[in-house]
Amino acid sequence: MSGAGLSMRPARPCDAAAMVALTRAAYGAWIPEMWEEQLPMLADFDAAVRDHRVELLFVGETLAGLADLLPEAEALLVESLAVAPEHQGRGHAGRLMTRAEAVADELGLASLRLYTDKTFTTNLALYRHLGFAVDGEETFRGGTIVSMSKALG
Image (tube, rainbow, N blue to C red):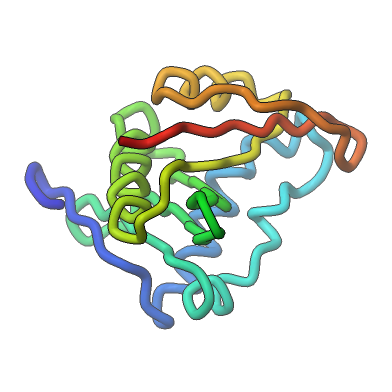
């Protein structure tokens, strides 16, 4: 993907530190509401680069977003989707999800899955807008996790 200064590529081991910084910034906005760091902020991105499929979105030379993708038996789990605060509101989350759909297709997987906290109403609205449906809710760490999926093809 390129155009208008945008490009996308798979993460490499040398990207792990930048991925940590981006994720901490993107999820950091929720700390005042949640009173704790969110799980993606605690992720081991060295391991993610090695064991998952992580797609990076750049604006020029700047890392603007990432999608941490984990192939499962029948679906591609979007483990984490993060866009740097200064790049939010520009359609980058949608671009990353379109890339996730392409990865799922490459892997022969029929759907995307993700989880988000019920408190993250803007994320829930975004995922619904992108075609995800709510599969269920469960209590987790004192809150409510919403499970969502999107059938592909």
